Every structure is written in C-alpha cells, then in structure tokens.
Amino acid sequence: MGALTWNLKGRRPEEIEVSGISGITVTPQWAWGGSTGAGVRVCIVDSGIEADHPLVGAVAGAYVVVGVGDRFEVQETPPIDRFGHGTACASIVRRIAPDCEIHSVRVLGDNGGGVGDALVAGLRWAVGQGYDLINLSLSTTRERYLPALRAIADDAYFGNTAVVASAHNATVESFPWRFSSVISVGSHQEADAGLMLYNPAPPVEFFAMGHRVEVAGLGGTTTCNTGNSFATPHVTGRCALILGKHPTLTPFQLKDILYLTSDNVRGNNG
Image (cartoon, rainbow, N blue to C red; front, top):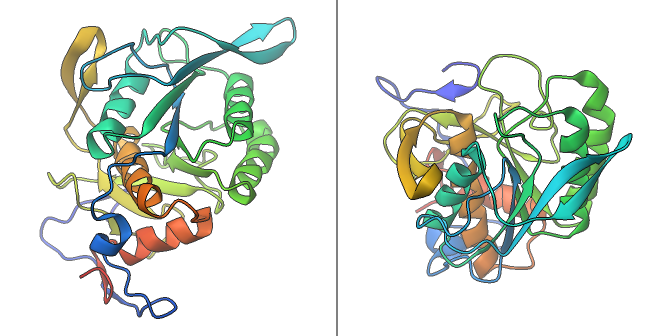
C-alpha cells in the first residue's frame, strides 16, 4: 500500500470487525438502496462545468471567483469549463447519483492553475450556501492558507455540509484533505467503480476508483483520466445517494456510514 493509493493486486486489505449502531445493521441496502440522490445539493468547487454536457446534464447554479481589486468575490456566471477537470468530476457524481442537483464554483483558471486566495473565497462561499456536499478534487500545499481552510472546513462540518476532499497525488503536505473535519479520499487501482475501501492507517480515510476512469471531456466528449481527483467524486456520489435516503444525517454520521459500508469492513456491510 502506497502513501495515497491502494493496489489490491496480490493481497487483501485488513478486515475490521464492527457491530451495529443503535440496533441498526448498516448495510448498503439500508444506507442507499433505491436512492438516486434526489433532493441533494452537490457543489463542485473546481474549474467549472461545461453547460449541458451529455454526461452531466443540467447545472443548477454556476459561479466564479474573480479578483476585484485586492480581494476575491463570487459572481454568478454561465456554466463554463475551459480546462475540463470540473466537468470530469461532475460526470462521475452524475453517473452515481443521477437525480442530485449539481452546482459549480469555478476557482481554477483556463489552464487548470489557481491561487489559494481564490480557493479560500470559493470554498467559504460554498459553505455559506449550505450545500449538502462539496466535492473538492484539489488542494493547496501553501501553509499560509491552512488556518483559513481549517476554519472553513470546521464551519462546514458544524453547519451540516460534508466536504469530500481529494488527497494530493504526490506524497506532500496539502490542505484541506488533511483535516479530520472533511472526508478525505485517495484512489485504488481496481476496475470497480463501486469498490470503496476504508483506510485503517490515516490520514487519507477512503479509497475509491481513480485509475483509468471514464469521464466527461470538453466539447461533449468522453475521456479517460487517472488520479485521486477522480476517486473523490465516486465518494461524493455515494454520499449523495446516502443523503438522498437519509437527509438528516450529520457529516459525522455520514462518514460513519461510509466506514461501515466499506468493502473491507466486516460485520455490517452485508
């Protein structure tokens, strides 16, 4: 097992014995069986989302972070993505939770680059809107943003917004995926979009499919991408299914259900 990815070939993951919570046996059927994510508001904080891509469909709301003098603010915008990263992530969420609402906050530029101040402004704004889920398939290595991002992540956690954050693809310190108040995701290399693994050796908490994932490309196309960025929306999509069936769950409870239904956790996942 690498620092941020989990290759199952040739070995089995550790199995962890668990028992029911408050008399409920938490199984996938109980957790999300029959759910389509209807009624769940998901915000993709990324490079934007291409309007009406056939693998994404309608974007319920689109916003962009822009510099105004010496500060950054969020403005409404048409659904636009000139880099493709956000559209790819949105297509994975849509595939898993077809009836969820997808919103976009664009914090990255046309070449996929961005600045920490834009990330902070966009994430803070998204948390303030009370979205049920925020997919954050990016991070920053600049420690000067750590206090602001930690405070925003805590606000989300206590405000019932679950932030699902991608671990960095390299073994470097970055944020906010390192915070315990978010749901952190790395990638395994199995060709199974439904396989989710709990990591008993944090800081990254869950592993999902992130190797050669079929995703939306720009111009209505389809492409194949690899990385923790594309594992993260698999977890966001599953969270949308769970919240569609159990809308009053807190982020703490949601993370607990993800753990109990992970494929390498034995006892409840049926």
